[in-house]
Image 1 (tube, rainbow over the protein chains, first blue to last red):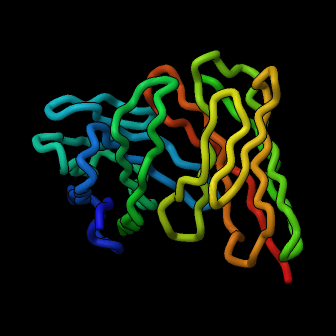
Image 2 (image 1 turned 180 degrees about the vertical axis):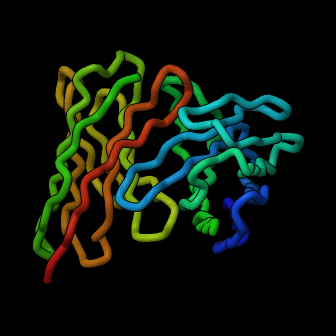
Length: 116
Length: 109
């Protein structure tokens, strides 16, 4: 079955450590996205990529980094510069981005990161 | 980016229709309206989307007003498993799907 896999489901880190969250899709989608969700809040866009080797900052990119070396993979690194890293992180993909384009996002089931 | 406004929460009796409203008065002519839902601690699930015409699929119906400034998601026969947060989203011209805080729908027996 095609889908998006995020791993691990739960992740614990000490403050000051970088941590990388995995996101893999086998849907052959061009576009991939990372969102962050805090308790009781909606989703906020961190980074997105419409094509391999290219990505753009979202609304809250500070303290995060990404890479898009392969079409199916879009890992997110939460750096020590991110002041409040504890959150629920969601990865998504779509066939293509673009205003008015008929392409719903498909989401993974998220990684819950706790930094203490 | 076009913004959406939704009620914070709604209740619905099991077996009845759930009608979830959304305002998007600044929507542009080529922007789609999307609906997603999120059950606690899971990724959002796509429900339906539309541009101008009303749409229906196996999950729901989407009614978009003629001026496109608002829409309504209809779950025709709500079940307890439909309890979730429902997001109405307009796809922006910067290729970013902007989520608001959504409507928390509680379906009760």
